[in-house]
Image 1 (cartoon, helix red, strand yellow):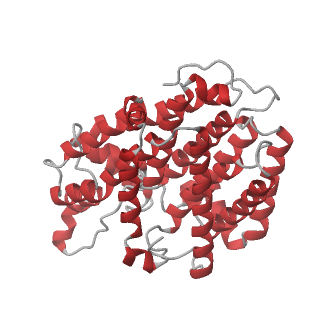
Image 2 (cartoon, helix red, strand yellow; image 1 turned 180 degrees about the vertical axis):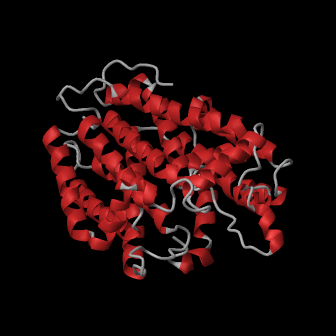
Image 3 (cartoon, one colour; image 1 turned 135 degrees about the horizontal axis):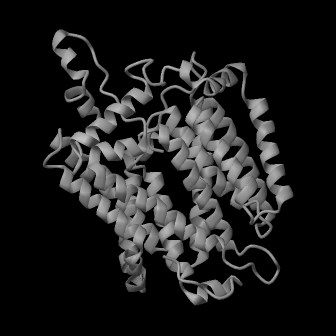
Length: 404
């Protein structure tokens, strides 16, 4: 936000708000109860992943860069996840966090749509902190959280605001021109139609139909021309063998870095350094031939190359445990009125958001995404909350089951 509103950067509001959140967390009377979240598998695996990052620093291709990334970036992200997860004391907290994600996404999109223009390629240009593909991923992931507020138990005002937010998210996604975002949207849409049981089938179908209408009006011929390239991937520059800077060629080299550095990888945040120093193309720089020090363009290749096989295993395990936790909560018995209890409905929304990340993130270097870790924090907090008998009884959720 401070990139769009520079005054926020001058006032150091992000830093001050973070410090205030941490201080208030430890000043809470039930902080001991909140620290129970540290036992949740999601939190433990996140801390193991952080440990692997630290261990990768001495052998990193650029130790200073790796250490700086941990201290100035990822450590704050993990701290945010811990505070967020530990601060969940009631379901209303989770609902507020979902609302803040939707409101923040809406505000950011409105700012982008009013301050930035589509470039000659038919896509949003430089957006500050995010590029167009990153913004596409965020829109895909926050869309299911807006869908949550369309359920029967939501207030009318919430529903109308959620509908407005969904329209803005779809328009913004079109403006990004992100093909990975488009694929992620298809995956999320499929999940909503077939698996989002907290909404009646007619509402789900109507929501997806409305989304198609918005896409039809917001997208021009240039956008659909870009999307149609997905039907003929072999002709795209990203296909294997077409261009050395294409995604599949970068992924191949990334897998190579993981096989040559299987234990701790090339160092966290050092994938571009590997491209410029140890890749098969690096030697040509001595001849004066330029080379792009490329990002991984794939979250799974990124973490495997930078943290080795153990890092990739822990990352996949973290995603699997998150999905397992959400699946158990999403299957909680319905309430006395026959409706899905709110915590189960939100679990389904978070599942769709996680699915959107996995699909869209397959084409982006977002393995350490702050947004992903806010999802982890919400899921961990939800898992601890759903294990408490009194929290489920308050929602008419029936007999609780252990949620790991």
